[in-house]
Amino acid sequence: MASAGAGAVPSAGAGAVPSAGAGAGASAGAGAGASAGAGAVPVRPEIVCLCGSTRFTVELRAANRELTLAGAVVVAPSEVDGPLTDDQRTALGTLHLRKIDLADRVLVVNPDGYVGESTRQEIAYARAAGKPVSFTDSV
Image 1 (cartoon, one colour):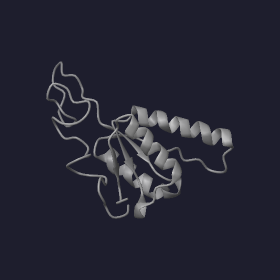
Image 2: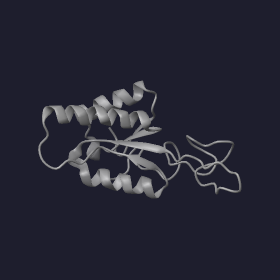
Image 3: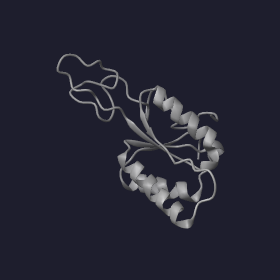
Image 4: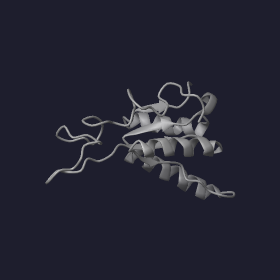
């Protein structure tokens, strides 16, 4: 993936995948890294929605892999081979907004700071819904 900017796929700090005792979904002081003992309720891992241009498939896949290996559940844009009809494009755009609804936060994959119009709309939607938004590269 391109060099890390503000909010890149972090290992610690703001926007990072939570460690024990922190982050969305943590309950009663147990974090994502806590082991489940007798009667313990499993902690829900952080859900991260990736946004970005589908021209950055390699970078989106790399961010997905890093976050998944760090313990997050990742939802990402659909990969579609071939052309789409206008109806299909609209349906996929709406579906991606539902993915943002499910997420605890949004990570925008934006190599060299590129953010296209669809991604700008997704960022505005996420922010209006109160979702934290970070970027892999500076904007």
